[in-house]
Image 1 (cartoon, helix red, strand yellow):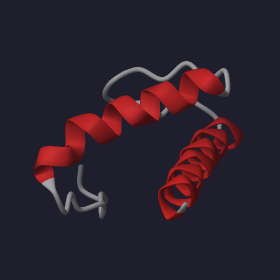
Image 2: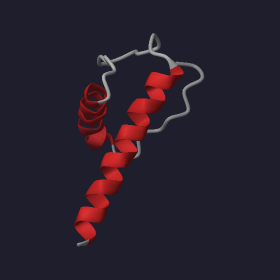
Image 3: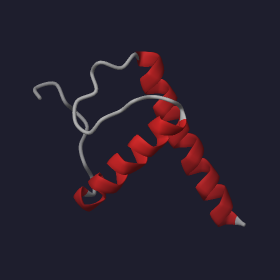
Image 4: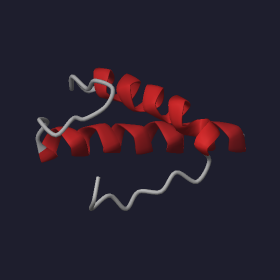
Length: 65
């Protein structure tokens, strides 16, 4: 893609991140598929991202205990 700026910093983690994204999408009721998801709304994409951040913060807080 010409305009893509996202850079994979740890290529070995890409598959795990993709699974995490799809799992988070299912939790908020968004139907994501592997690959291109340009057909979802901004609201749906935001819900997925928000769920991912929420789960990461919870995991971090759990690790602090």
